[in-house]
Structures are given as C-alpha cells and as structure tokens.
Image 1 (cartoon, rainbow, N blue to C red):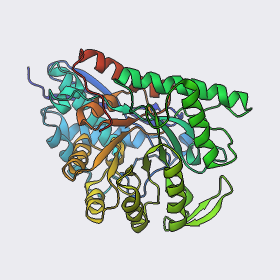
Image 2: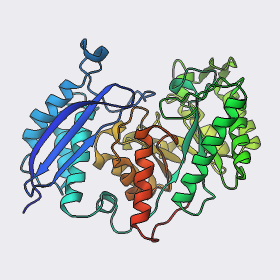
Image 3: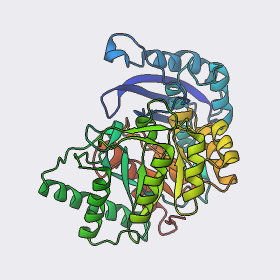
Length: 423
C-alpha cells in the first residue's frame, strides 16, 4: 500500500518543566502510525521560530491549544493524501501555508510536530530505523555525549554566571564507554558536592546547581571529580562551556554583567581575556555562545583568537537558520553552529542548516532543549547527521536518559559497525 498520509492529529501534553507542548499523531494509508513530541527552550535567541502559545488564563498563558487546532485543521487539510516519503515537499508545504518569516501563524511547535511524526512514519513504513531513513546506510557514527554536569545562569538559581558546564568523553573508545565515563563522574561529583556542604539538587537539564564562590570554582569542582573518578582531564574527559551570553548581556551588545557571581560589568575584550585565561588553565574543548547574539564582532574576535584551539559554537546568534549561518561563515563568526530542530521548525530546514555547516568546513553540534519530552527523535537525528557530538542533558531525568538509552540501542543495533570519535 502507498505511504500516503491518511490522518494527522495533535494533542496538548506536558514537557519536562510541566509546561504544555504539542504531541502529533500521523497515520498512513498502509496502517503505519507514528507520533512525535516537541521540545521547548528557556534561553532563546531573538530570531528563533515562533512557538505558538495561547496567552490566556490556562497554564499561565502557556497553553498550546491554538497550535493543536492548527495541526488538526489547516495542516491536516493541506497534507492528507501526500506521500510521507516526500519530506521536503511536506515541510515546505507547511512553510508556505504559514507564510510568515518565523512560523508565527501556525506555530513552529505545530509545524515541527508534524514534520517529525511524518519522518518517523515514513521510516516505520519503510521498515528501517529512523537514523538510517534520514541519514542513509552510512549513518553509523554515534555522537560523543557532551553531558551537562553543572548549571548556572538561566538554568539554575545560583551564583554561577555561565549556563552549562559539560563533560566531554572524547578519550573513550565507544559511545557505551563514553557514557559510562560521564555518568561515573557525575556520581562522583555529587559526592564531592555533598561533602563540601553544597547543594546536590539539579537544574532543568539534570546538571547540579551548587552555589560556588566563583565561575572558576565550578570548573575546578568538575576537574576534581574527573580525577577522583580515575580519569585524566584533557585526555579522557574535557570540558565544554555554554556561556549563553545573552543572559549576561542586558542589551545583547558588547556590554556584559556577570551579576550572578558578583564579578560585575565587563566589556567584550575583558570577557575574551577572561576566556583566554580559562582556555590556558583548564582542559576546555568547546565553547558555546561565549558572546551575545548582537555581538557579531566580538564573536569573530573570539573565534580568531581561539578557533584553532577549540570549537567555537554559535547558538542564539545563528538559531539553526541558514540565513544567519551563512552570514557567520562569511564573517568568520564561529567555526560551528548549534543545531536545534525546534529553533527552525522543520526536519528539512534543520538538515539544510547541517549541510551548510558541513560544506563550509564547520562543525555542527546537535542539541536538545531545556524543556524536553521522552521523545527520542533527537538521538536518531544526531546519528543520521553524522555530526560527532550531541548535548542532551545530564545523567539523570528520564527525558534526558531516554535519548542516551536510544543511542546505546543504536550502537547495539549496528553490531560493531558503529564509529565513535570527536573529529
């Protein structure tokens, strides 16, 4: 039977923060059924695709019944009868139906939910795993897990300015081993925090959120944990940082305020100099959003100075959008882009963003959102895109672990044919 779309429907569900999000159901004429659930971000770039919220009394205005109605109504009407294998046609049909620059009419949450569910239905109907359906038979590289281990900024209520400190097990021989490295270190860090009388509660993505006396103290705690676990910093495990610098730059320009730690106001140059001290002192392998999305010149200066030593990732500045990534490539703004499906709103456009990075010789860093669901689409997508590294949270919280467990499953399915490497 043909893989044509028979029905599409939406449902309002809750994400990992207890806020509403969209779940989508797709059924094909051959009886295949698939579902998807859309994540939601906290620290968002100004140019992200628009997440349609109801803005009424329900859920403090965060309900998604309008987005669900768009799935059930306009989107279903436009797509029923189309072939599920024609992903690009389906995604661009929704983009045209929406007709806005940022998907604000139908909602990127409505559009992405359908886009993901259609891809999953087509893979199921073709009887091949999602990663192979999207990435081809050569999709065998399992990403290095950049695990969120310590939180600050918008993701925690503490005295650390930068949003994420991640552990990167680039020295492991396989994903299974790499995941073990970071999970073991996570538990050792918990013991260290407990012993020092620091909080062991976790932030939105499962990383610890202790009140450290400084940002440097946060890094030193992680290094202590790596060593105590029996690994070598910079050899087995390195550190990745997400400054999420928008949250320390009130006007999204070249003025910064490290208010959480009490470090105070800094210029772009001062922040870059601070970064240089850290890069010399600590085993930092990747730095995401070291400057704010409005500080294009600062970003380029940071990349010029450190781009040959570390991966410099743009998130809020590029928002998985080829328009901004191409500008970044032209200006030498970074050497990598963060890739988030819901930042742009369709599977096709996300793949186009990855392709643009690859063709420019850039890296690309696949990512979850702080408001997640138990959907494992991202795990398959990361393998399909052959990017080599992924961030999807810490060694706790079910919505994060679901992605790691799916990657373990994929590595197992590949029966020794999988690859695992940082570069």
